[in-house]
Length: 194
Image 1 (cartoon, helix red, strand yellow):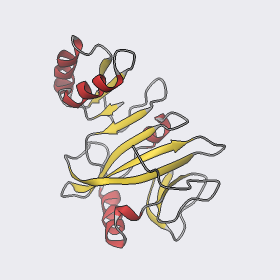
Image 2 (cartoon, rainbow, N blue to C red):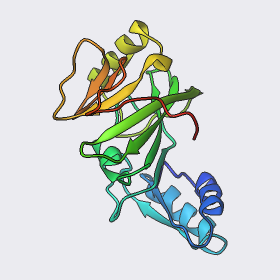
Image 3 (cartoon, one colour):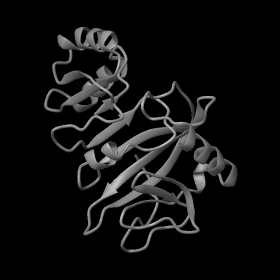
Image 4 (cartoon, rainbow, N blue to C red):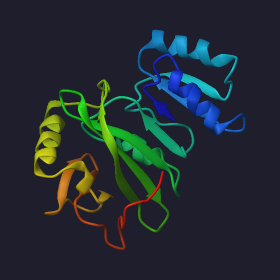
């Protein structure tokens, strides 16, 4: 799933990666850009479908192995986390401040009795804002978090029913990022490779 597809350039790259047997769902909020992406992808990459929708709220019909977000957010969409495949589903998302700067986090979902996620800081980024993925309260919380510790210090992503504790770096709707490794019931370690 590719959120923020624009005219389809990166969706085409993803379609090449997954090959003819794979599938890419490209989501673009601007109907005119979505139409252009549909045209651009139709003949060479039929495995890439385009949906004109709010990528922050979009929920696919089936789990996604990978969700890539190409626009900066102040907070995760629960829809993205819920959309990940039960084992090794990955989310690449840029958490950014009001000036469009921040960092990419790669979050990997691990199989288990409880929902377990492993985040890894990938790289600093400057990127356009994601419509729907920003609000002033979340912006203030992200600014505080970035002042408290660098994004590289994040060690776990936890979800309800766990509640934020003193290790909380940033919290949102039903999720929170922690500076501590997860317990055996949550997230445990960093992943070493994409």
